[in-house]
Image (cartoon, rainbow, N blue to C red):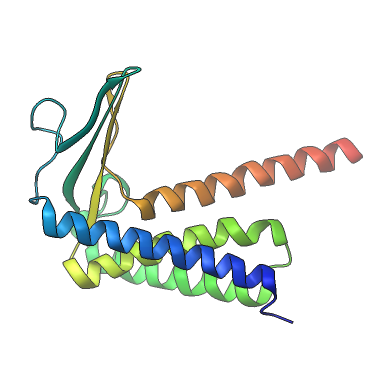
Length: 172
Protein backbone atom coordinates (compact mmCIF):
# COMPACT_ATOMS: atom_id res chain seq x y z
CA UNK A 1 0.00 0.00 0.00
CA UNK A 2 1.38 3.41 -0.99
CA UNK A 3 0.41 5.14 2.23
CA UNK A 4 1.98 2.69 4.67
CA UNK A 5 2.89 3.59 8.25
CA UNK A 6 6.38 4.64 7.13
CA UNK A 7 4.99 6.99 4.48
CA UNK A 8 2.53 8.40 6.99
CA UNK A 9 5.33 9.07 9.50
CA UNK A 10 7.56 10.67 6.85
CA UNK A 11 4.70 12.91 5.68
CA UNK A 12 3.89 13.79 9.31
CA UNK A 13 7.54 14.75 9.85
CA UNK A 14 7.49 17.00 6.79
CA UNK A 15 4.23 18.60 7.88
CA UNK A 16 5.53 19.15 11.43
CA UNK A 17 8.69 20.84 10.13
CA UNK A 18 6.67 22.97 7.70
CA UNK A 19 4.31 24.10 10.49
CA UNK A 20 7.19 24.79 12.90
CA UNK A 21 8.86 26.94 10.23
CA UNK A 22 5.57 28.74 9.52
CA UNK A 23 4.88 29.44 13.20
CA UNK A 24 8.40 30.76 13.89
CA UNK A 25 8.19 33.06 10.88
CA UNK A 26 4.79 34.35 12.03
CA UNK A 27 6.25 35.03 15.48
CA UNK A 28 9.23 36.91 14.04
CA UNK A 29 7.03 38.85 11.63
CA UNK A 30 4.68 39.94 14.42
CA UNK A 31 7.16 40.53 17.26
CA UNK A 32 10.57 41.55 15.88
CA UNK A 33 10.91 44.68 13.74
CA UNK A 34 12.15 44.12 10.19
CA UNK A 35 15.80 44.92 9.87
CA UNK A 36 16.51 44.11 13.50
CA UNK A 37 19.61 42.29 12.39
CA UNK A 38 23.29 41.64 12.84
CA UNK A 39 24.26 45.29 12.87
CA UNK A 40 22.86 46.06 16.31
CA UNK A 41 24.84 45.73 19.53
CA UNK A 42 26.36 43.43 20.66
CA UNK A 43 25.74 40.85 17.94
CA UNK A 44 22.28 41.59 16.59
CA UNK A 45 18.62 41.08 17.21
CA UNK A 46 17.29 39.66 20.45
CA UNK A 47 20.23 37.99 22.20
CA UNK A 48 19.67 34.36 23.16
CA UNK A 49 23.21 33.72 24.35
CA UNK A 50 26.51 35.53 24.07
CA UNK A 51 29.99 34.01 24.00
CA UNK A 52 28.90 30.51 24.99
CA UNK A 53 32.01 28.50 24.06
CA UNK A 54 32.81 31.27 21.58
CA UNK A 55 29.35 31.21 19.98
CA UNK A 56 26.83 34.07 19.87
CA UNK A 57 23.19 33.49 18.92
CA UNK A 58 20.35 35.93 18.43
CA UNK A 59 16.89 36.13 16.88
CA UNK A 60 16.54 38.67 14.06
CA UNK A 61 14.04 39.68 11.43
CA UNK A 62 15.74 39.68 8.05
CA UNK A 63 14.03 39.82 4.65
CA UNK A 64 15.62 37.62 1.97
CA UNK A 65 14.34 38.31 -1.54
CA UNK A 66 16.74 35.93 -3.26
CA UNK A 67 18.04 32.40 -2.93
CA UNK A 68 20.75 31.38 -0.46
CA UNK A 69 22.45 34.43 1.07
CA UNK A 70 20.21 36.69 -1.03
CA UNK A 71 21.70 35.57 -4.36
CA UNK A 72 19.63 36.42 -7.44
CA UNK A 73 17.37 38.80 -5.49
CA UNK A 74 16.69 40.72 -8.72
CA UNK A 75 15.11 37.59 -10.24
CA UNK A 76 12.47 36.87 -7.61
CA UNK A 77 9.75 35.65 -10.00
CA UNK A 78 12.14 33.35 -11.86
CA UNK A 79 13.34 31.91 -8.56
CA UNK A 80 9.74 31.38 -7.46
CA UNK A 81 8.88 29.55 -10.70
CA UNK A 82 12.02 27.41 -10.45
CA UNK A 83 11.30 26.56 -6.81
CA UNK A 84 7.72 25.55 -7.58
CA UNK A 85 8.83 23.36 -10.50
CA UNK A 86 11.47 21.69 -8.32
CA UNK A 87 9.00 21.11 -5.46
CA UNK A 88 6.41 19.54 -7.77
CA UNK A 89 9.10 17.40 -9.41
CA UNK A 90 10.38 16.19 -6.05
CA UNK A 91 6.87 15.39 -4.78
CA UNK A 92 6.18 13.33 -7.92
CA UNK A 93 9.53 11.57 -7.56
CA UNK A 94 8.99 10.75 -3.89
CA UNK A 95 5.38 9.64 -4.42
CA UNK A 96 5.82 7.50 -7.53
CA UNK A 97 9.42 6.81 -8.50
CA UNK A 98 11.65 6.72 -5.43
CA UNK A 99 12.68 3.13 -4.78
CA UNK A 100 15.20 3.98 -2.04
CA UNK A 101 13.52 4.08 1.33
CA UNK A 102 16.67 5.70 2.77
CA UNK A 103 15.97 8.75 0.59
CA UNK A 104 12.40 9.34 1.80
CA UNK A 105 13.19 11.39 4.89
CA UNK A 106 15.91 13.62 3.35
CA UNK A 107 13.74 14.31 0.30
CA UNK A 108 10.76 15.19 2.49
CA UNK A 109 13.02 17.51 4.51
CA UNK A 110 14.01 19.31 1.32
CA UNK A 111 10.40 19.50 0.10
CA UNK A 112 9.11 20.81 3.46
CA UNK A 113 11.81 23.48 3.62
CA UNK A 114 11.30 24.55 0.02
CA UNK A 115 7.54 24.76 0.54
CA UNK A 116 8.09 26.87 3.65
CA UNK A 117 10.17 29.39 1.73
CA UNK A 118 7.76 29.48 -1.23
CA UNK A 119 4.80 30.10 1.10
CA UNK A 120 6.76 33.04 2.53
CA UNK A 121 6.87 34.67 -0.87
CA UNK A 122 3.07 34.57 -1.15
CA UNK A 123 2.48 35.77 2.42
CA UNK A 124 5.25 38.33 2.94
CA UNK A 125 6.73 38.96 -0.53
CA UNK A 126 10.08 37.62 0.69
CA UNK A 127 11.55 34.87 2.85
CA UNK A 128 11.81 35.64 6.56
CA UNK A 129 15.13 34.66 8.13
CA UNK A 130 15.68 34.83 11.88
CA UNK A 131 18.49 32.71 13.31
CA UNK A 132 21.80 34.50 13.54
CA UNK A 133 24.96 32.79 14.75
CA UNK A 134 28.45 34.10 15.16
CA UNK A 135 30.66 31.03 15.33
CA UNK A 136 34.11 31.80 16.78
CA UNK A 137 34.19 35.19 15.06
CA UNK A 138 32.57 34.06 11.77
CA UNK A 139 29.30 35.90 11.20
CA UNK A 140 27.15 33.14 9.69
CA UNK A 141 24.33 34.31 7.38
CA UNK A 142 20.90 34.62 8.99
CA UNK A 143 18.65 31.63 8.19
CA UNK A 144 15.35 29.97 9.13
CA UNK A 145 14.04 26.47 9.91
CA UNK A 146 13.18 25.85 6.24
CA UNK A 147 16.78 26.62 5.24
CA UNK A 148 18.05 24.27 7.94
CA UNK A 149 15.79 21.41 6.80
CA UNK A 150 16.89 21.88 3.18
CA UNK A 151 20.54 21.85 4.28
CA UNK A 152 20.07 18.75 6.45
CA UNK A 153 18.18 16.94 3.66
CA UNK A 154 20.82 17.70 1.03
CA UNK A 155 23.66 16.81 3.41
CA UNK A 156 21.90 13.54 4.29
CA UNK A 157 21.57 12.65 0.60
CA UNK A 158 25.19 13.51 -0.15
CA UNK A 159 26.58 11.59 2.83
CA UNK A 160 24.26 8.66 2.13
CA UNK A 161 25.25 8.59 -1.53
CA UNK A 162 28.91 8.73 -0.60
CA UNK A 163 28.40 5.90 1.91
CA UNK A 164 26.56 3.79 -0.68
CA UNK A 165 29.33 4.35 -3.23
CA UNK A 166 31.97 3.35 -0.66
CA UNK A 167 29.99 0.20 0.21
CA UNK A 168 29.57 -0.59 -3.50
CA UNK A 169 33.29 -0.14 -4.18
CA UNK A 170 34.16 -2.30 -1.17
CA UNK A 171 31.90 -5.13 -2.42
CA UNK A 172 33.72 -5.40 -5.77
